[in-house]
Length: 309
Image 1 (cartoon, rainbow, N blue to C red):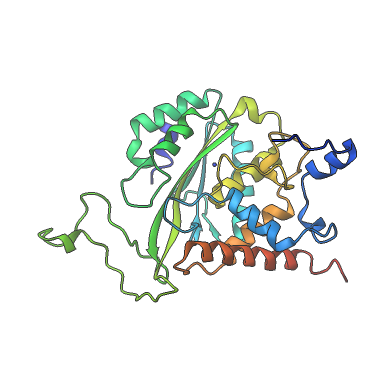
Image 2 (image 1 turned 90 degrees about the vertical axis):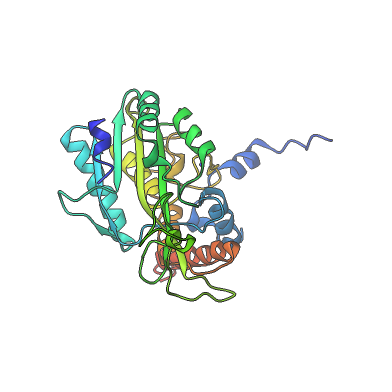
């Protein structure tokens, strides 16, 4: 458990189409090609967001607020540092502040050749770190069981927190936590000074802990850059482990097809840029997703601003 200590501080049969048309439809769609092929870009983006985003039940899509510190355990110094540097670089590109050497990790990445046993042991011995008990802080017991039982090359678990959108002050209290004399119900209620309207909310959701377990036997099928970029994606956003991204050119497909992407693709970069640029104070969760989709559209335009020139 030394590794984990570093961390705590997803009728009729149709007519058969010609093989060429089937291949064209099944080929992952690159973001820069969407307009060229005539497929509505905004519709594609909304479907991509709906497919991969995995917010906690009843909560908005969460993201990191400012600082992120990466810790890697059970890897030799050189590959561990490569992962730390790459994830930190991607984080810096979307406006986060990577932690300096010696910072207290809020992201822990643990490599293992027995990941299932490691996941089971971590959850059994440190369950409170995975399920802290506050409302809307994680994806629930079913998702945690799926995390333990997963056979994926990379598995991840995130804990997020409702916070004051303006100050970042925690907007929920944990079970048993109170203030003052703890004499009445208000002693157990979070205090938010901002006021809400019918269309906006003073609270947003921030990720504050991510645990990633790498299956080093399966991870050996891809390059160090592909692994680091895959980890970047699942660390910096709430990604559904069960998402079907086969229709999109994304690093999330790399374990199914190592040739799918050499690193983060335009879809991935636009998603992260859009997520971290989006306004998050929409009270309606559907509107919140739509705002992220619009932000991704703007990020796509920025990525390809020089193409026409």
